[in-house]
Length: 633
Ligand code: WTA
Image (cartoon, rainbow, N blue to C red; front, side, top):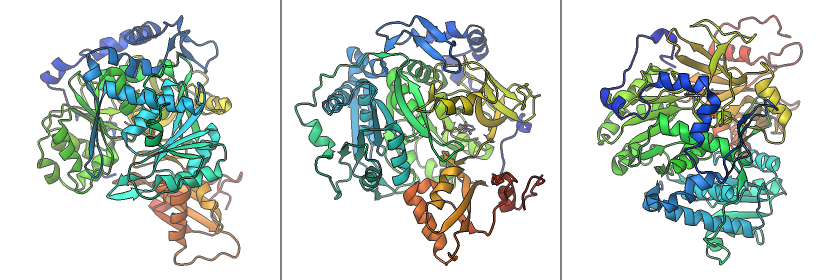
C-alpha cells in the first residue's frame, strides 16, 4: 500500500459539519457509550424494546454456560416478524423495500407488501417440499431479488439458510452443502457479470454430484441460457411459484430468540470452513440498532450497500438490517465497471442514493480510472459514505471523501466480522474522523488491545484485538463443532473474545486495525484461508505439497502467492502454472486463484513440520527473514 494507515497520522482530523451533527440521531456518542457500558443489559433491553416480539424475554443475557452466551432468553420472535410482517400493517406496506437493477439494465422494484407476498409464496413452496423448522437450506445465487426472497422465506418457515457466495466453485459449494446437510439447494441458471454469464447451475450440478444429501434443486431463471435440468430433482422457481401450493398465506414460524437463523461459512485457520451460526433474536436487535445509528437512516432515504448478499455484509446490511428498519434498499447485480467505469456513479445519480456503503478494494478499483468518471455525474444526493472489509488506506479514504462525497459526507469505516453479526468499531456521523481508523467502539461493545497475557497495551503499541463483553449479535457457535468455537475464540483468553486481528489504540482512544494474525488472507475484501488454497492445490495430481501466502497489493489489499512441490515423476511444464490456476478456479473459486505459483524443491518448515509462512512472505517481498532459528533446513 502506498500510504498505509498509521496512528502517527493523528493530526489528520476530519470534523463533521454542523449540518451533519444537527441531523444525526446520536449527537453525543460519549454519553451514549458510557451509559451503554455501565449497564449493558439495560441498554440492550431498551434496544430490543424497539422491535416487536410474540413474547418478551424473561432474561436479557444468560452467561451461565459462557462462552455459550444466550440473549433475550424466553423471548419469542422471528426475524421476518420485524422485517416484513409488521410493515404490511402500516404505511410501509406501500413503501419501496427494494429497487433492483440488473447488469444488462433491466429493473425491478418491490414494495414491502409485494416482498412480503413473494416471501410468503416461496415459504409455502418450501413447506410443500417438506422443509420445516430447523432444516438447513443452501442458497447459491447471484445478486438478484430472489436471493433475498429465498433467505427470508427460509427464515419465515423456521429453516436455517446457508448462503454460499456465487464466487465459490464446485468443491467449496459441495463441502458447505455436506457440512450443513442441506436437502434443498436454491440456485439460478446463471448470473450476469461483466457482460458474461456466470454458469451457476453448472457449478451447482457438479456440487450436487459430490453431495448426495441434496434431494431438491430449485432453479431461478435469470439468464435464460440452456441448462441441464435433472428430472425429479430440479424445478424451475417460476413453475413452483405458479402452483396452487405457492400460497400467499404462509404463517410465520414462532421461534425462540435463540433458535438458529442462518449459518454462514467463513475461512479460518484450517481447510475446513467454519459455519458461523447466528440466531433470530439477538441478531435482529443488533443489525437494526447498528444500522440505525451508524448510517442514520431516515424514512425517506435510499440506502445502497454494494456488498454481495452472500457475505455477512449483505446478510446484515442488504437483507435483514434495512428491512427491519423499513428502509428502501438499492441492489445492483453486476460489476462496477460494466460497461464503463461510471456505472456506479450513474446509478447513484439515477436512483438518488443517499448513503453508499462499500469496500476499500472497490474504491481503489474505481479510483484507478480517475475522477473524470464520477465528476460527470450529479452525486449531490449522497449524505454519508461507508467502508468495510479491510483497513482503508488514507489515499483511498481521501479520494472517496473528496471526489465522491465532495467533502460533505463523513465516511463510516466499520470494523466487524462474520462472527460479530454487525458493526463493532465504527464512527457515527457526529464523531470526528481520522482516515484509516475505524475510530471508537459501538455502544455496548467493550473493546481492548492486549498483549499475549491479556494485559492492555500502551497507546501506540501493537496488540491483539479483543472484545471484553458479550453482545447480542455475536455468533453462538460453529455449526456442528462447539469445540472449535471455544478453541478458536475463547481459549487464548478465557473471558475475552479473540477477534484474530492485530490493532493499535492511539492517544485519543481511536482504534487502528492492522490486519489478521492468523492464516486468513483478505483478497479484495474477501476472506480466504491459506489452507483452502493449499488443499485446492494438492488436490491436483501433479502437486505433492503447497503453501499459500498473502502479499500486500495496491488494488486488492492482498494477492495470493503459492508455492508448490511437485510429486515424484512430475516435471514443470510451461503450462503447468495456468493449469493449476484453472484447477483452483474450479475447485475453490475465482477469488482463490493465486496471482503467482512458484515451483520449489522444499518449503521452509519448523522442526515440528509447520510451514513458516512468515519466511515465505518475507522472501516473496525481498524483506529480511527475521528469526529463523526454528527453521528445519
Ligand atoms: C477485516 C467482514 C480493518 C478484519 C465484515 C476482520 C477490517 C475481517 C474492517 C472480517 C475495517 C473488516 N478495517 N479491517 N473496517 N472490516 N476487516 O468476516 O481483518 O469477511 O477480522 O467480515 O475483515 O472479515 P469478514
